[in-house]
Image (cartoon, rainbow, N blue to C red; front, top):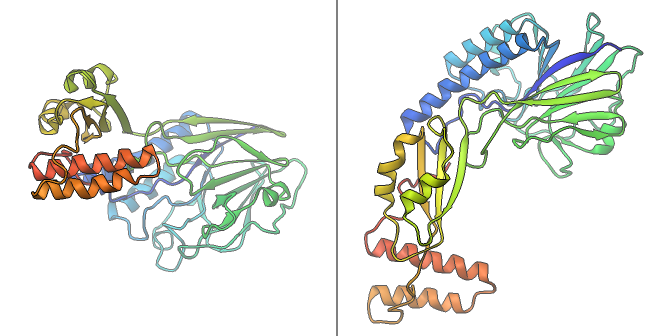
Length: 371
C-alpha cells in the first residue's frame, strides 16, 4: 500500500471568550485564533499532505463571528486536498449549524449524521468514516462498527469522542470497540491534552489536543498531528502551530528579592506569551505584587501574579484577642488544630494570611479573574 500523509487537528475552539484576559486582549486572541486556520492551510501545502481530518469543536459555539466563518471557508479552500469535519459537542450539527449555513468549498465534507457514514476516495486508496454530534451530548457512536475492509484501501475514522471513559456523555469509545473496528487509523477530538500515538488491536488512534491554549489549564506547547500511514505502520509527528502559549511559573522567593528571583528563572523570550507567576517560599513580609507587576508586565502579552508565600512570623499572633482580627484568627486556628493532615493545615494557614491581607488593605493578587 502506498504511503499517505494526514493532517489531524481538533478542538480549535474558534471564538473562545478568553474570560481570563482583559476584553481588549481577549479580542486580540480571537483574531489570532483565525490566523491559526491560515497556518494549518500553509502546513498542508508545505508538508504535501494528502487529506485533512478535523475531529470536532473547530468552533467554540454554534454562533461564530462573521469574520471567523469567512476565514474558515477561505482557509479550508486553500488546503486544496480533501478535508473532513466531524462536528463535536461545541459545534454540533443541526439545521442552524454554521456548517449548514456556510458555503463551504467543494474539497470539504462535513459529516452530518449521528450514525457513522463512509466517503470513498479511490484516487488516494482511502475510505473515510465519520459521524457528527447532532446535539451537545452523544451516546457511543462506534459500538458495533466494523470497517468494510478492501485490499489496498486505508480505512480511516474522523470522530469527536472520549476514549476510555465509560460513563462519558461525549461519545464514549472503548478500546475493545477500536480493536474490533478494522480501522487503520482513528482520528479523535474532544480531550484537550494530546494523547500521542496509541494502538488497540491493529488500529492506531490518537487525539492531538487543542492547538492553542486558552487558559492556565492548557499550558505549554500545543500541536496538531502529521500522521503517516504505510501498510500497517504508522508514524505520528506533533507540529506546534500556536501563536502564543500559556505558561505557569513557580518561583521560590525565600531569602531573595522577588523581582530578582523572577528574572533569574524567566526564559529569554516571553513577550508573546501569557504567564501566571506564583511566588512560593517563606518571607519576612508579604510581597508587593503591584510593584512586581509594574516592573514585569511589559515582558509578557499578559501577566498574572499570585502570592503563595508564607510569612516567617507566626501568623497566629493575636489570635483570641478582643478584636475583629483576633476573632478571625481564633476561628481559623481552631480549624487548623483539627486539620487532618499537613496539606489541610497549609491551606488554612494560607487562608489566614489572605484574610489578614484583606484586613490590612494589602493586595493578595494583581489580577483576580480566573481563566
